[in-house]
Every structure is written in structure tokens, then in C-alpha cells.
Length: 398
Image (cartoon, rainbow, N blue to C red; front, side, top):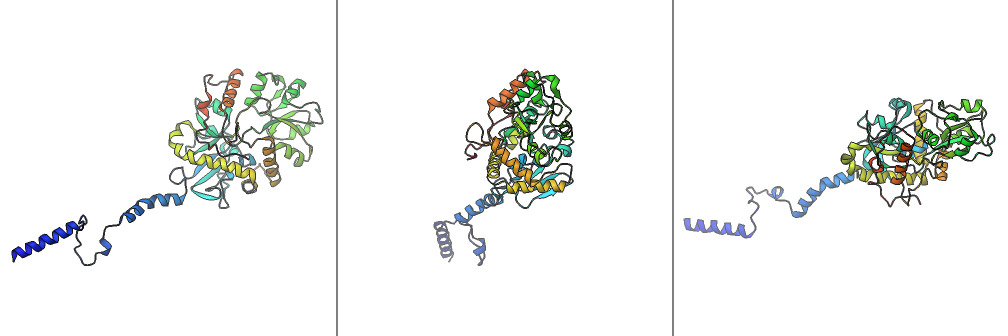
């Protein structure tokens, strides 16, 4: 009897082995819920977290949430690539002077938010490059080439994209008063007083290069049209090509006439204005994020150029809600984008790509600033303050 039992037991064991008994035999009659998952089920379980992350959006878990971008002024159309990242579900914080919402790519969620912070008085009129070293939650800030050069030692930054191909800054004059003036150099030869903000790099460079003379430069400009109007256009004045020509002709009743101008860029100082930059020390940490985020912002430039209405509406709305001294209406926004496209302020780089930077051009600005005797690192190289590493070369304006 014992032998029969042993044989039965042995037979049972052999059957289990032949059946592939890596999974222990069930000990209860209700075994359906305890069976091992199939290979397909195991694969599905492994893929689920990745699929959930993808469903959340391509930037989820890779970029800071929110991506914080510090601008240099109130919302304006020159900043529109940033506002193009927002959809209808945005929020305007009138106390902090910030616009935030889900960060979108072509209208689709990316899995993170974006916060666009106002500059100017909202940060004590401090340059974004300085603010980036005060508030460490800032991901990207507007840093022009000359600011990056000045800050290379104490507040080092790396520009990762240039939403604007040309600097919008201009010197403008009254064409009726100076009908023979066509360039900034002509203003220099005519000895016309040039009213500018104090501390402008372009003035130091132009004086150094003989474009203007030091005695004709008046650094007392405060942003008001009062002196221009009072002197009936006898002076020249700095401004933005995409703003002042419209406001002086259409919104300043005491003037109400066209102005003539030349871009600082076209006069010989080809810096990148309002480039998007990171703190230099953040490069490694942000590299995976920037590889995905920068092409999204490149595409936002292209999308804005093709259909600016949405971003312009957000800009106008935000300024209205801020209810500060800065005013910005739909007419100015429409003028601005048209002028940006006309003058190539928005445009492709030295090829067919939008947002990339010509490092020879950056080096040229460094060399001009060194020649002007400005207090900078004379050994600074362009690739220290700018990179095209994250640019998608396939994205450009038609």
C-alpha cells in the first residue's frame, strides 16, 4: 500500500515537472486570481508607467513644472513667442505680474506649466540676468548678448535660443526736420543731439567707432515723449522699431506724424536682443529638458508669425489687467508683428532655421566691446555665452 502511494506520489511529481511546474501548485480550488501573469500581461504592466508619462505630455518629469521665464519688460509683441505657448486656460496674477497656464505645443499639453514673469518695475528695473541669480526657480531669462558679456564672470549665462533675429532697438528722428538723414551715421555727421537711456552699450560702441560723437549724446532719456514733442523733433531718440513709430504717429496727439529710424543692428552692432538664456551652472541638469523645450519655442515663433492673434490677445489682456503705466492695445500689437516680419526682427538665422545664433556674430560683438574699452573679460569666447546645441535645424520660417 505504501508502495502504491509512493508510486502515485512519484507519478504526480513527474507530471508536474513535465507540465512546467515553475509555478507552485495551487493549494485551493479557487486558483484563477492567483495564476502567474502571461508574458503579454507582464509586458503591459512594465509599459504602463511609460505610457502614463507619455500621456501626461512629453515634458512631464523632464522639465521643471512650471517652466519659469523671466522677461525684461511688460508683455509686448516682441515677447509673443512665449505667450504663444499658452492656450485659453491662462491666469494673470496682477500682484506678481505673471501670466501662467499649461505649456502647450501646437495646442497640445506638454505635461508641465509655464509662468511668464514681467520685468521692468516688477523686478525693480533690474536686468533679468541679475534676477536669475536672485530667484533660483527661474528656468530661462531674457539676456541680450551685451548683458551676457558684461555678466560672464559674476552672473554667467548661456543663450540657448534667439526668438528675435534682429535687435528691435532704433535711433529715430523727424524726417521733416532732417530730410537728408538716412542713417545713424548721418545723425553723427549732422551733430544732432541723440537722447538715450544711460548705460546703453550701443552708444559706447558707436562713439568708439566714430559713428557718433560723445558730445552729441544726451543720456537723460526717461521713456517719455515729452522732450521730443517740446523740441518739435529737433532731437533724435532711441526706441523700438516695432513700437515707437506707431505710438508717435497714432497715439501721441501732440506729435501725430511719422518718424524715420535706423536699427542699431543695421548700424553695425549685431547683438541678439532678448535671447533665452539659462544660468551656466544649470546646463547639465537642464540639458534633457532643453532638448525638448527649445524646439517647441522655435515652433511657437513660426506659429506666431503665421497667426499672431491668439498671443496678441493674451498680451493685450495681461497688460490691461496689470493696469499699470504701461498700455498696450490691439492696434499696436498688430503693427508690431507686421513690422517685426517686415524688418526681419523675427526671422531665420544665417540659414533656414529660426532661433539659432551665429557665433561669429556673437564674437564680433565681444570684439567691438573690447575695442570700445568696456569693462569685460577680453578673453571671452562666443561659445561660452551661447550655444545652438538644442536647436532643431528643421524648424524655420517659410
